[in-house]
Amino acid sequence: MGFREINSKMVEATVAPGQRLFSQRGAMLAYKGEVSFTPNLRGGQGGVMSMIGRRVANEDTPLMTVEGSGTVLFGHGGHHVQVIHLSGDILYVEADRLLAFEGTLEQGTVFLGSQGGVMGMVRGQVSGQGLFTTTLKGHGAVAVMAHGGVIEVPVTPQRPVHVDPQAYVAHHGDVRNKLSTALGWRDMVGRGSGEAFQLELSGSGAVYVQASEEKL
Amino acid sequence: MSTYGTPGAAPRVLDPVTLPSDDNVDAYTFCVELKGSQWFMQKGKMIAYYGSIEFNGIGHGRLDRLVRKAFHSPLHASDWVVAEGSGKMLLADRAFDVNSYDLDDGNLTIRSGNLLAFQPSLSLKQSIVPGFLTLIGTGKFVAASNGPVVFMEPPIRVDPQALVGWADCPSPCHHYDHGYLTGVLGGLRAMTGLGGVSGEEHQFEFVGAGTVLLQSSEALMTEQATGAPPQQPGVPGGGSPGGAGPGAGGPRLPGQLGDLQRRFGL
Image (cartoon, rainbow over all chains, first blue to last red; front, side, top):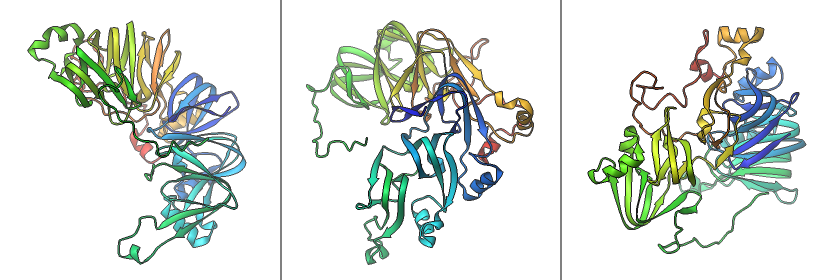
């Protein structure tokens, strides 16, 4: 199981009976075998309450359930695709960046204000995450979309990583992030460097950065 | 797993001697060498050339014999030119991946917007699938795709937008999948239109022997204004410009609200 990267913009998933996949609607490129695609009203896992939660949090992407037996190719909008393997830790990612993920992963929504209060909310605004973001927890693989290629930057306790908020894609592991500002009088008069806000990630884990400052 | 490239590598400088002959310069550029020969190419895909090359629109009197032999699509005539002369010509298309393909007494059908250029030893015809062109014969042609092209063997079902083309005629047909509209919940879905569409209920299905070419994304190249096939009994898509091919969804079921529900994420 899992995803096999065919090229930088396309992944192949194998579906077997009893194993479900979730994918963004319309992201299927081709398939072999008997595979069915069912639109998922709840936009993911959990009951009606989690659906309402996602709607409120604006983290509901049109998802579909992929079942059956065969192989499916996924890709979307010419975006680059990065496969991330999770082994028990939590991936934080925006819902609209999710191309496909395995049914073994548990989907949730978190309020960014819960990590650092008001600063967390400010951070969400700056990085384009909004007030809420999606989490995936458990064992399995996720295919995440990004504009431009993706690089994985490891975060270790000794070496915090600073990331441009617009280039931030996702992170996993035991990582704390905070918004560091380098605002000076120059920014106030419109002569700033354009890099006044950075995300500082510290702890141990990894952060994924896209080679573009364009959002999806 | 992450590669950062080679920092500090000097840019490669190419000149008429070091440019490849009928080969890729990089993933996005193709170089055609002309030695008094002719190539058909789609308008606006030439980015640079060395030497003396003349570009003449199709319909030019002198090219009549060539066009009669190799170009059998009057609808596309206004989008194509003939390059002739001697020199090297670079072709590219909006940073899409470009590749050349060799046909040896074969046939290949390709989306009209994806074909950049071909040798006159091939002959170009319109496919009976609207929006697609068929190349028959022996020779080389150049095609663009969003992301690298992936070759698959039938039987396979392909999203219409991801289809680049197919070779050796593996019977293209439409496949409609409304399986989730059966049963109690599915009936409710069909009645009310709630629950929405998966976006994957219509595919092109290929069976039989051959090869199917896929591009790795659903971002379509802008459709070329290819005119319309003649309005005549038995001609698919006759009368409607651009053909019915991509984007046109499946048949609308009673009770469905169409695109409205999708817009609201239902």
